[in-house]
Image 1 (spheres, one colour):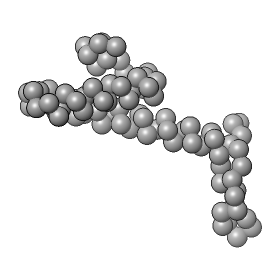
Image 2 (cartoon, one colour):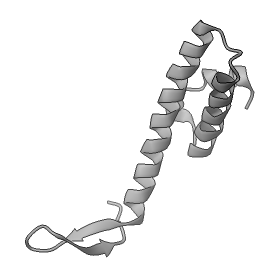
Image 3 (cartoon, one colour):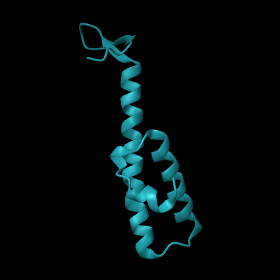
Image 4 (spheres, helix red, strand yellow):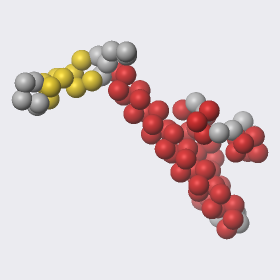
Length: 85
């Protein structure tokens, strides 16, 4: 995925892996110090959206893997596989 094409793809349309790769590229560009102020702001905004997308995908994956079982008093009593509805 090249730099120009990556920025055109909506964040919601990216897989976890593609979002993470683009986020790593953005961090590298920002850390290099070679971006203009306007580019840095644009990259930061895109990076924040990518970070949120990655967190969302990880949370969804974790929820699919296991769900916490509660006892009668509402205390955690173990886990069970998540059953998708």
